[in-house]
Every structure is written in structure tokens, then in C-alpha cells.
Image 1 (cartoon, one colour):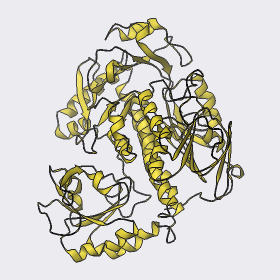
Image 2 (image 1 turned 60 degrees about the vertical axis):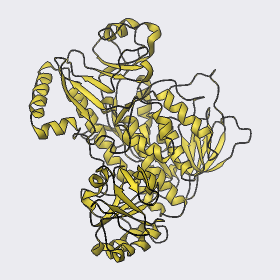
Image 3 (image 1 turned 90 degrees about the vertical axis):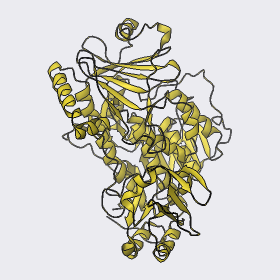
Image 4 (image 1 turned 180 degrees about the vertical axis):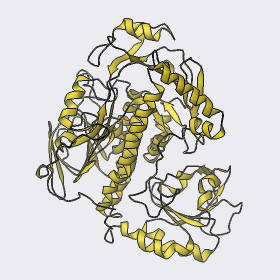
Amino acid sequence: MFDSNHGKSPIYQKSIPILRDTVYGSRRTSREIRREAAMDTHPTEPNQADPNHAVPAGADRTEPRRRFDVALCGAGPVGMTAAALLAARGLDVVVLERRLRTSDEPKAISIDDEALRIYQQAGLADTLLELIVPGTGTRYYGADGRPLFDARATVPFRLGFPFKNPFAQPDLERALAGALAANPRVDLRFGTEVRALTQDADTVTVSTTSGDVEASYLLGCDGGRSTVRELLGGTMTGRSHPDVWLVVDALGDHHVERFGMHHGDPERPHVIIPGLGGRCRYEFRLFEGEGEPTDTPPFDLIHRLVSRYREITPDQVERAVNYRFHGLVADDWQVGRCFLLGDAAHMMPPFAGQGLNSGIRDAGNLAWKLAEVFHGRLDPSVLATYQTERRPHAAAVVRSSEQLGRVVMTTSPALARRRDARARSALATPAGREFLEEMRYRPAHHYRTGLVTGDGPDIGVPLGQPRVFDVRTHRTVLLDEVVGDGWALLAVDITDEDAVASADGLAATFGTDVVLVTVNGTMPRTDRRVLVDVDGGLAREFGSYRGRFVLLRPDHFVAAAWGPDQHDAVADALPRWSARTPAPTA
């Protein structure tokens, strides 16, 4: 379960062959991907910065430090998110970015509740809430222009934040860069290009245009044209799609909807996503002769397509680009002490709005594991579970996004008619309505292997963040504010004190105390911390765990759940993850 490349030979001694085609496409080297990407302009790929723009604080250092806990290549949203999470957990990090500043291009457009919860761990959620439209989901329209259904969260606010939120990426990058520049644990270096890297059993040495940097680990967060992935000899599996889309980010827009609008018009599939302060994104499928990814979109084309919704002038076009999208997943997310995150690890179509959010999930999964290893609480071999847990889910999201695009954005009138008829038929049934309106077609975020023990639908899944009443402080707060961002051991409706006390030793192994959770309408008299339900949310999240202990990981996924009669067996198994004893192998 914990196979790892940790401590193996330097990467240049490892040959990573280009493998044969697969059913999803082909495996290609990073050099091939970079060459192809140079012909396309993808909305999530980095562009060169304006050399006249001021370099942020912290980039000009006369005697730069050379040794860090973690080095990160790429100061886009994923790289800066990972840096913030690592710094919040006590690690010293350096972020290396070839551009001279943060990007001014509004590429990513939507951030979801799961990502905002991850930012909560870095202490940045309140900052980001100032940048978003608190969104509700997506409205899908049929070929006739009539609404089909609204897709929304199954349980609104289940994770403690709005569900699907439009934002402007330049605002996000500036906020993250400002937070990192003010953090004494972060060295943010713009204008620094990574040229080469080597690694041994203890150190990754990164050669840059401003000198060498040493770190215990390196995270490649440098986008679809990843230099780190290329230096590692990495390949990606999947395909690039031939369709060309025009993306227009407009200013001064009249749209005020808090949801995205996907128009399944086969004559011109398009998407509208209103943003904050009069920003609005329009995306239109282009047809033969209307443009290629290498073309600069002419204003007359922009005006012709956007004018069905509004008048637009050239000065109201913040950005316009033609692009093709890709459905690619890296084959190896870890090579020795080096990891790939975000677009360096996966690229996907935009139709599910999950590109950036998937990258933030990568950072949320890996950062706490690195910190636990550094602080001596977990064995280094558990780092292999980053790929074990994240790659299957990312690959599923890529496939789901491709399928969604084929169905929703079809240019076949016959297929569009069948799609609309089947959707309206499904919406006439409770099960069909639930499937579509609650987005049950999205891949479940469920870890069946990795840093989990046991099997079942309620193990390896993220626990929600309901409001709880903390009996100790007599305050109503969100769950994460009580359990924190470390391990948590919860006893759910276990009333026998001897049974609860039997878990104290295990709780100590993970640096925590047993917390009582009651969803049965009682408030036990005890010196232990007790959480009680206030609005049904605690009962909803913990209902299936009644009478069991629940071990929550620092990323708020359920690592294990067991009854008091199973405690001895579980207590013997769980500490094997610890650095104090040998870690299990696959």
C-alpha cells in the first residue's frame, strides 16, 4: 500500500520510456507536450510577464538562502497555495517563478467549496471570500434556448463555504503573492527560471538562473508546459481535442446571475459565467475558418458572437484568446523526492470547472503529508499515497469533463434533441432530478486505497463541516475550527466512558485527544470536549458513524471508523503509519 520512490537513485539514472498508445489516447513526453502547447494557447497556461512591471517584495535578494524544506517551481495559484499550506504547517519553502510578477490574465474562473475549505487551513479563506461571487452552480439550457435544469450542491454550505464561485485569477494570484511575501517562512522569487535538477537520498538540488537551491523535496507546480515534468522525463496519457474555442473576458457587463450558464445550442455551443464587479466570461465554440489557437481573435468576431447578449467595445475586452483543450494525466506524479501538482500533473477540459480546483486538491492532499513527515509523525513512505489517492480521482474528473463537453456542447442537432428529451424525461422522476440537479454525475471523491484503513462508503471520504455547539467554549462554530488541521479522533454517541478511554492511547499517537460527538439529543456530563448538533448538520454528517470512533486526517478525510469491539485490531494497525514504527508495504 505504501510503495515509494523515496530515497532511490538520482533521477538521471532512471529511464522513463515513451509508452504505447492507450484506449484514451497516447503517452507523450513533456517535450512533445510543450512543443504542441506552443502552437496552442490554453487558458490555464502561463504567459510571459511584462518586464516593466515591478517585481514583488522578496524577489530581490542580494544573498539568497540556498537550503529549504521544500522548493516549489511555479507561482501560479497551485504553487502559491501549496506554499501557503506548507508554511502554515511550519515548513520553510521557496517558490521559484520565471515570470517577473503574477499573471494579469483571467484564466481560471471558478473556485469551489472544497478549494475554499483547503484555503481555510492556510488561514486565507476570509481573504479569498472578498474576491468571489458566492455562486450556486450551473444552469443548463437546451437546444431551443429554454432552461433544462439548475445543477447545484447536494447540501448547500455542507463544507462551510458557497458551492461554485466565479472569481478573477489575477485577483487570486495577487492575494496569494501578498500573503506569501508577508510570511517569514516563504521566500517568493520571481524572475527565477529553473534550468536543471538532481536529487539524492536526502536532497533535491535545483539549478536556476540565479543560482542553485537545495531542498528536501521539490514540487512541480509549473503548469501544462512543466519544466519539472520535462526534467524528470515524465509522460502524460490522454489526448488533445481538435475543437477550437474562443474565450472572451469582458468588462462592464450587465449579467448579475450567481450561476454559470451552459447553452447547448448545436449551432453555437457557448458558456456565460458572470463575475465580480461587471466582469463576465463568454466562451464560444468556433467552426472551420473562424480561427485557430495561434490566431489573435479579431474584434469583429468577438462583437458578432457577444452582441447577442450585449454591446461591446474593444476597451471592454479584457482578454480574448482561441484555444484547444487537453485531457491529459501524468503517468508518474512522484519521482524520488519530486512531485507534480496542478496542470503539471493533469490537464482537463473546462466544462466542469475543475481544472484549478483539482490542482488545489493536489496541494491539499500533499502538503499535510509532507509536514507530518518533516515533523516526524509519519513515515516518509506514506508520501507515495499522494499519487495513489489523487491520480485516480483526477483521471476520473478529466474523463467526466470530456464526456460533459461531448454531451452538453455537441454540434449535432440530432444528438442535442435526444439529449434534451432524455434530460426532460429524467427530470420528471425523483431519481433523475436528483442525479442531474445535484450533480450526481460528478466523480465521487473517495479514497479506496492510500492512507485509509477499512472499507465502506463512509471511509476514505471527506467529512463535511457543519455548525456545531462546542460545550467547552459555549460557542457555535464550524467543525474545522474545533478539530483543527491536525488528526482528530471523534467518539460518536459512545456513552461508555471506559470504551472512550480505551482510545486515549491511540489519540495520543496522533497528537490529539478524543472528542465526543453527540447526535442523539443528549449532552453528556464529562470533562472531555463535547460537540452537539444545532441545526441537523452534525447528525447528517455523523449519522452513519453512530456508536463508532472516527479518525479524521488533517485534510478532513475519514481515515478509519470502527466500533469499540474492534478497537484493539484497529489500534494495532493505525500506528504503523507513524514514523515511530515501520510503515506497511503494498
